[in-house]
Length: 112
Ligand code: HEM
Image (cartoon, rainbow, N blue to C red; front, side, top):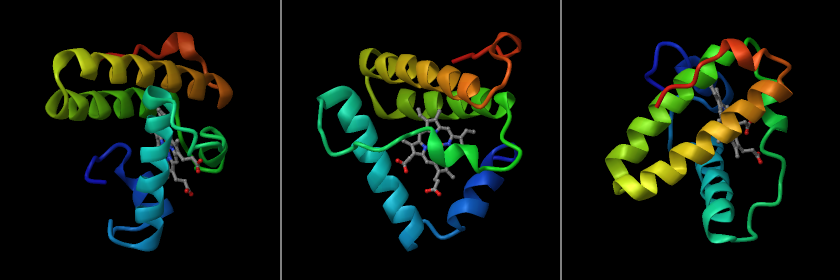
């Protein structure tokens, strides 16, 4: 939310109060999403890509930034081995997002 490059997308879609209904729902969905990836938890059975198609102005560089911020968080929270797994998955998804959003993946270098 505080990031000058991508924070505004979250503020616009979900608001500035992380305790509000939208944010709480969003975080619950993300918990289910990652639990499905790593724990085979069946709770998430939706489409992770769809909601991003309606975010106006989203660009490939924004995903590079997202991966960087996400990686900093997983490095802080998890051991090196676990963090590596999250980062590898995040990059896979970010690249797929970029392709599906019809952007040019070749011009986007993802660093983490
Ligand atoms: C700059 C990049 C990104 C932005 C700005 C962004 C923003 C958002 C926003 C605002 C929502 C909520 C949409 C809504 O409920 O109205 C959302 C949903 C979601 N995002 Fe992202 N996102 C980004 C990248 C990613 C990436 C890389 C992943 C996966 C690794 C991801 C996974 C998800 C999932 C799973 C949902 C929930 C989809 C559902 O409703 O089932 N996002 N994102």
